[in-house]
Image (cartoon, rainbow, N blue to C red; front, side, top):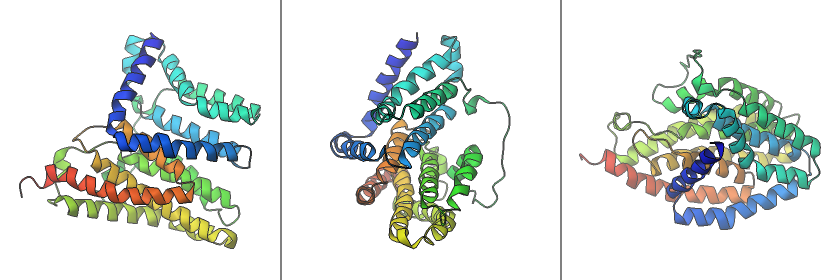
Length: 315
């Protein structure tokens, strides 16, 4: 049963990859993946990357696991859904495991695999019956992605925000905090709102898109501003810190534009989550982050065309 479900997952992944498009798939395979692989191979033996790489991977796995909606379904058709989770996560993390083994980081591999095992045997958060509703009056009601996303990730956001406040002391704390917080916030836009929510403001396509990006990116920049100010105290890395701050803000714009480029009322996009996670990692290489910024121009034009079908139809 487990092998059949895994085979079904690969079929779903193949079908979902159609959302990426041929050009972006080729760009991903020919340009981005080799760059990422080369970067990781060069850094895996250099402090603090032996810790950052597995921790970042585990965070992605936890993010996927905590949002699973198929737990009850798997529990119905398979008495041990944790076996399915474990098989999926082990397959997903094989590249990282091989990378750590190639650097002879055997203790890291042991801890990494043990944590994967613990995650697989934990119950996804979405099936919990405990209410953890948190009031967020500081966030405008129209920013429903933030209202929902922060409620689900509040503890994690606080845990990653606190180390960033010590960026003046150790710049790597600031860098790790910035990366993790960015990955959390870009994940808020994987679900598409119903059409009535999209059209509620009465905006035309370009006006809606401009207002959405400006508002959300501006709030995100303000959210990261204390970390940025504390980090630039370290004069040796001021330009690099400014570059990563701009790259993080740009990634949020990328996530929003990609959402409306692929918009389908009330749907969910696995391709969106995969692409935004990938963009977050490649933006660690600042010259490549510039490519993401250029790509946003094309995404904006495509998102505008997509939204025209829904927002400009009656005008």
